[in-house]
Length: 386
Image 1: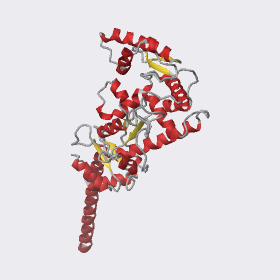
Image 2: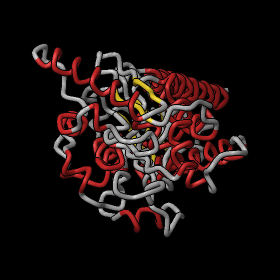
Image 3: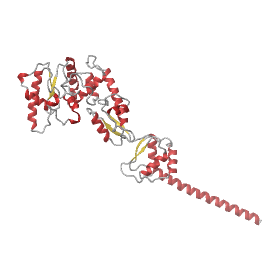
Image 4: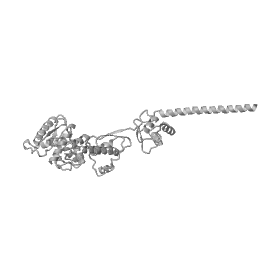
């Protein structure tokens, strides 16, 4: 009887121990679960303002956690990050890119963003009329963009873009391009070059079949001149038509932007008579036909204008000089000279109002040419362009 009582007491004691152990495990498990939930949804602490996380190709979750630690984040053990990633289906599925670490971001929100590729986008704009020097300068200043092109000369740059042997001028379509941290300037340029190839092909296929332009590259070059000569968008096709007629008649284009391009970085903001007389491959006052390359990045509207120039009889134009950006067009040299005199009159009137100088070469030439000595209409006019 006593033995049975002892055995019963031992059984009760074991049961109590088991119950206590299970209770402890339940309490501990509950505590661990609450800690885990607190980790998953608590805002990341230790971040400085405007921080982001860059996930690069080949980065594992432990690598990402180490990057977070380096950024100042102290939340969560690696095991907790692993469990949460597995629960969310993010394990092994972290997408490359830059991710925001904005205030209030939790581990759960960050892992979901990395799983779904919700990257931070930056914007880079190529402006209509930029030349390749302008483009390179802007790329060098772009935020979070890897710099790979800065040390490459033009030939090496085009080779890196898969366009070896091509001149870079005019080859990149003015447009807005989005990129994420980890992308390089070459990535942006490849997309811009592909966009220009597509736009140029479309413009060429839809061109006026009577055009004097013989190749898509000539169309690109013409469009770049139209882009630089356009003060008012509505005049693009009209200016393209004027240059088209000049080429057909064998007249020199005599357009100042080509001269300025030939001067290069030495250009000081003013174009003078001596600049028009100094021969360079881009001086369309001294050389016939189109310049050897484009002189800028033409936008879609300029490409369209060059492909479909407006009909008309104008062969000359000069800035209106009234601050509107408009041009005064003329079919004859005599009419053009009258427009030049009107421009000069407005120019002198506006000098005292702080209006920027325009067409100083036109002013110098007109000061030496009397109306009575005006050349025949077939003679190209100095200052035909703005």
